[in-house]
Length: 68
Image (cartoon, rainbow, N blue to C red; front, side, top):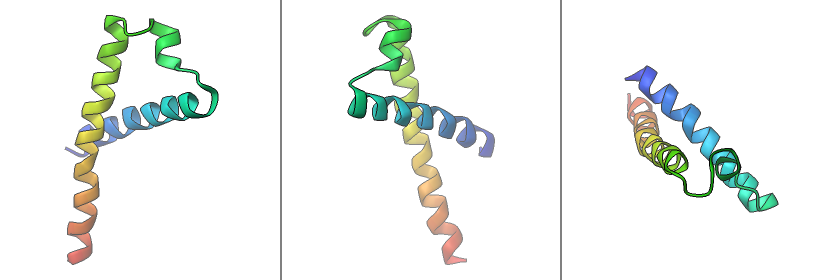
């Protein structure tokens, strides 16, 4: 599971950078590279969202380790 969480974390960071670009520069890198809401863009957005949910486990694992 640790490998899956590391992969998910990389995708989450990529998503965070994209959102930062949107917020600061009004520039959507994913849409620029793959087309605005094209199938590939939608797949990438979906993967980033799922990875964000997977990373919730890291948050709760941190609390679990602090108790021991």
